[in-house]
Figure: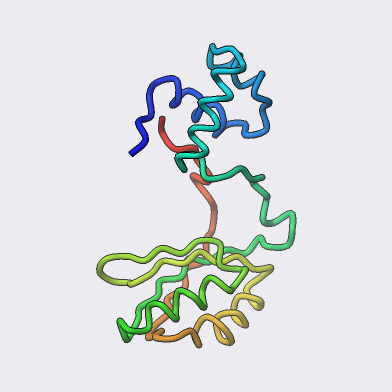
Length: 151
């Protein structure tokens, strides 16, 4: 396992706030010269500590402002692989987690509006293998969202 030290944690903290920094800017913010900072950054990437870089997009600005948290209860354990594969093919599913206990999954879904969600729920989500029950909760307001991990 890769050991993350204090300098690595500083690099991670800075990058979680601004992933578009150049290596030179990153090095200045964490108190290193560019070459050692670049080596540490590449090692964090190689070790899988940093899994990638992406833009955080405002869903409402691109027509996906309606968000639902979906609790999924399965009726057959043997359907898990098919359910998960099917879920992965639905672009409106932006997060899915398998849980111990009830429900079996929590799924975060984004759509344009309630009508689009209803259609997605009825035509795709409810028809996935092994689904016994879907319980939908509409997100009223995001209180904490995309918070960086503590370093």
